[in-house]
Image (tube, rainbow, N blue to C red):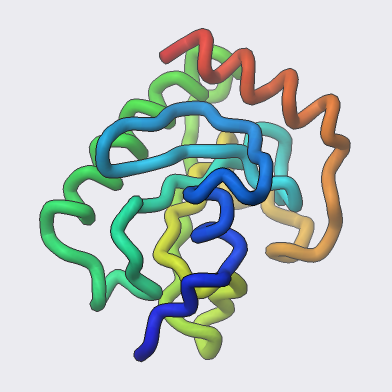
Length: 138
């Protein structure tokens, strides 16, 4: 596959599109999903350009999982949830809507995921407030 440098996540990484950042380090970025399935839905992406898990380096995959663990723990504290759903889709046939590897970090339970993936914009003020709460718990 050929990586699309103009996908929305690549633009977020370059600062061309704003996002509600929760965490950033040398290898990863975590930001809020603006089309959340539940309140507090966040995304962890690598800074490495890769469309799917199968194109991602081992180092970037490890860095993503480290960030997922940190953000998930912060969500539990900040949002008072016991469970965290992790979702990761590879390719359009699997339902991947942005061609940049990403892991959905979703507070709550699989039973809470009643809203389909990437279908409705969320309330930006609410999303910003949730980002601030999660970031403060990191």
